[in-house]
Amino acid sequence: MPKQITLAKFAGFCYGVKRAVETVKKLKAENPNTNVSVLGELIHNTDVIKELEELGIKTLKSIPEKGDGICVVRSHGESPEVIEKIKAAGFTPVDLTCPDVKKVQQKAIELAKDDYYVVIVGKSEHPEVIAIKANAKLWSDKVIVAASTEQLKPFEAEIKSHKKTGVVVQTTQRITTLNEIVEYLTSISKELHIANTICQSTAMRQKEAKELAKENDLVIVVGSKKSANTSHLAEILKDITQTIHIENDTELDNYKELINKAQKIGITAGASTPQNIIEKVIKKIEKGE
Image (cartoon, rainbow, N blue to C red; front, side, top):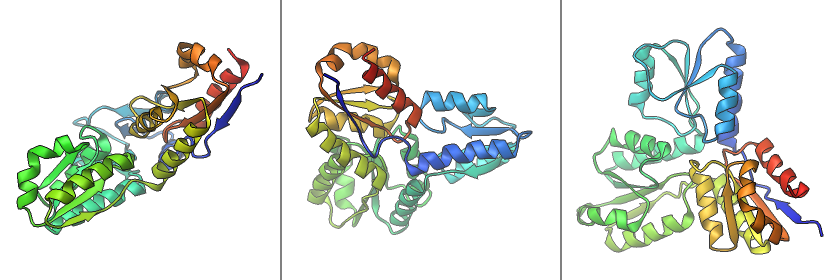
């Protein structure tokens, strides 16, 4: 009996990622004799990074003392200080920060300017969060990052004594994480302002994936283990049905038994997963390899 495979509508590249990848390729095509570099991985996907390298687009781990050509600021964003360093090194910066991420940065800046104690809900080590914090810190030293109520507790006395608390969220965060933190802050804040800055693409992807999980024996989440939105998808779905998180079709071999047992399989993918990688996963399952 053939397996029933359902692919989520909101699977793969989101608007911000698609825009970044297409623009970088276009920049190189229009400037073939100019060095085109990206500060950090453009997106969390090894296959895409390899493809960009083959086109002559370099990934920089840090800003060199001297550089030339174009240096792209990726969709996660950077602080104004980093952009100034890019210019000082001799590069022409091209800012491809996702518009949704820009909104979070602007909101965090507004709250910091208005003397709010700013709480950024997200993972402190994530590049998007590092950039949001750096932008807000230009206006206030009352800016913290937390991914759980436990991480907020050391700041409880400071929050209680401050007149106003403002919340922004990493665009790819789980709504449940935001809700838990808001509930905790409500009990300790004098005045609380919440900006739910989880992007619509992430919200729709998570909502649809939950429905997919309810209707299938197994859900396969495709995308990089370094991708926050992909990892969050896998975390959410594990509570609903049998879920596996793979980077590409080669990893399916590790889950042959699970796949063979499942009759109805749902497939979704993170915002930085290219369509061709999703298609390879589906073809391999259909062939029963």
